[in-house]
Structure formats: structure tokens, C-alpha cells
Image (tube, rainbow, N blue to C red; front, side):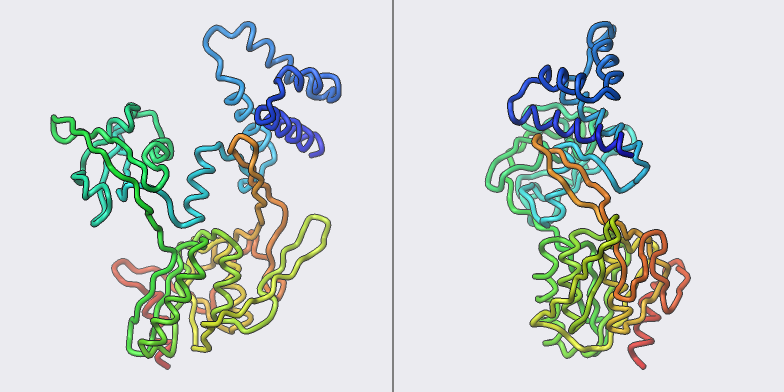
Length: 377
């Protein structure tokens, strides 16, 4: 393991050298002399550069590939390396807003990229129609081998800037100049499902979640709600601080979760009650895709609020990834700790057992039926 950590540090230094302006040659010579175990890598690198019959990736691509190789050797699915483009999209998702045109982008099986504009957003206003095939963005051809993320990065940009799209509609090519606007991706949905019973669904935890939860609580209070269904089904997690803040809408005090590090030490994260905290009876909907920060919230509500979990055993993703942004815009997500519930149940690999199990039925939301029946009592 020390060997892999050493290699990782060398690669990070190599990446940093690009940002700082140092030459690759300097680091090559330094690592050759100071890290004997690394000699074979540089021997292979030099042989490829000198003898490979074909074009080699540039130094940056080679470095990224090497980092991916080291990370894969660690055998941890959550310790990952994200290249700059992917990291940029991840930041947008966690922020909950970005500069875009307001259209769904889908890649078909034959490699075409098809647009579906959203009502009232720039793409629709500019004249783009559902089914239009995107073939160019600002003069860059869209190729079948491209990924959705690569195309999204071309389309998105600073709010207020313009992007020129060429689409194919039927046998005709049409050009549209679209002004990018702030596109928000809400993380919370709410409504009244029965007189006196409210419903809140958190799809993921972002920077917007706490603000949206406040609005939800205020509107549900004004609607005469006195009991609540919290839906965490399909929630993959997100920003753990947002989950901690969400807990404050239901829990008055106590440790919401523990974070344990590899040296055995722990850090306790206490509840921060919200000014919109409610004391209503609460049930929580979970399924096999409720994961990570969503499991933290569900576990705390089950133990501190005594809110029953309805559904399936949760995913069991209780490891903590620290994100390290590197000098070229890429990032390392490194597993550095594990989460435990207030009663010290380990989430990783175990998940949370529901208080009331349900079996999915086609065409029927069994979760909601159970929740409404329980709250109606």
C-alpha cells in the first residue's frame, strides 16, 4: 500500500509541475534517482516515446491514464480520479445550477445526440424542437464517439454568453444562436398528498437543499399539514453538510452521525436545528438506491426522531470521500473515513434495515400507501 501511495504522490507532483511551469524532464530525472521502484515505469515511458509506431497521447493524457491505473489498483470503487471536464460537471450538479440552454440531451444507440427543449427555456425560445439532432456546437462537429459529458461541456458556459448550435431536422441543417441562462436543478419537491399529510422528496443533496427545505416547510405549514412523508428513494447522496442541515428540520438535538478515520479516531457531527423545524409525526421512504448522505439522514431520523423507515434495505454506502482538486482542474476522490449512525451502526456494506418492508408492485406505489395508512392512524 505504501508503494501505491508513493506512486500517487509522484503523479500528483507531476500534475502540479504542469501548473507551476516546471518541466517534465525535471521530475523525470528526480523520480528516477529518488524513487528506485519507479525506474521501470520511466523505462517503459521512454521506450514507448521512442519506438511506438503511431501517435502517442500527449503528456497530460498519459499522466491521467497513469493515475487511473494506480487508483484502480487500490480496489476501492469510491476512490476515483476525475478528469477536468467530468469534475466541472460534478461541481455543477452539486451547486444545483449552471449556465445552459434548457434542453435534455440524449445519445441514441447509433451515436446521434438528440435534443428535447424544456418549456420556457432558451432552447425552446430560439426555435429548437424535440428530436432535433445536434451536429455542431460553436463550429465543433459532434461525433458518435463523443460522450454526453463532452457534448454538455460544449453547450454549457457562462450565464449571458451565446452558443451557436447546428441541428439536423429531417434532411435540413438549421443554425440557432442561443443565449445561455441560469438553469437551476431543484433538489426538493413537495406537496400535500392528503388533508393534513405533506410529502417532501429530496432527490439529492446540493447547495440548494437547505434553502428549498425552508420553503417547503413554510408552504406545508401554511397548508395545514400536521404529518409528513419524507421520500429518500433513489437519493444517491451528495453534499453531506446539506444532509446534516436537512436533519435540523426534524431533529432538535444530538449527534446525527459519526465519522471514523483509519487511526480509529472519531468526529461527532451534531444536529443544527433549523428555524423551520417541525415536530410532526414523520415516516421516511427508502429503497435499495438510497445511499451515502441519504443513509446518514435516514439513520439519524430512525434513531433520534423515531421515524419509521418504510421500504427496502438501503444501499450501504457509508464511506467518506475527501475531494482534492488538482492543478489542471482534475480531482481525486479519496476514501478517508467511514460513517456511523448515532447508535454507532456502521452503514458501509450493511445499509439500513427498514422498520416496515414493502415489495414493489407494478403500477402501485406501495411505499406511499403504507406511509399514508400509518400516518392516518
